[in-house]
Image (tube, rainbow, N blue to C red; front, side, top):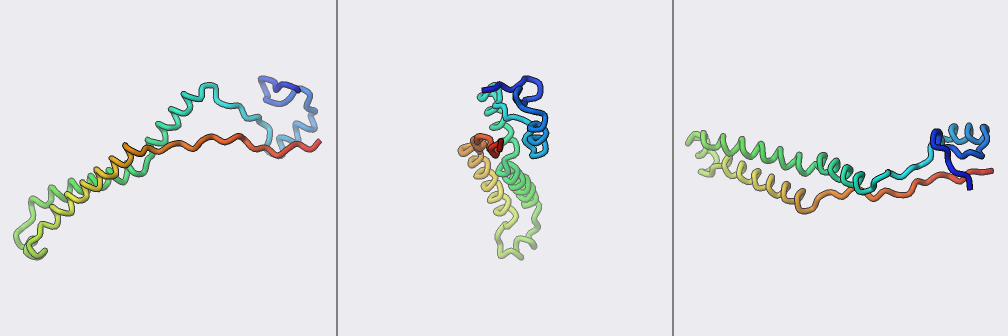
Length: 127
């Protein structure tokens, strides 16, 4: 079997016509696995945790919950009476903080796992 060259990634015995055909079909580059799979897996895992939607949603619930809880300390007696004597802002703020904690625990206890890399699929060369 021929070995790929280090510069172009094409086979040494490949003719110019075959190389042009491969480029035209979008198959100009050979798949090369990463050098250090552990390093790549750690980078992918850190990147997937960085963009975890559970953390963003939990942060928003926490921010709004804290703001609503603080606002509840300034409720007038008329606002509380309008809500049938229930401190709605306080209870909703505390429940939003509880939802925030649930989202953070969910993200911490069940972290996202990056998908396993699959083998590249190239159509067979007709020759």
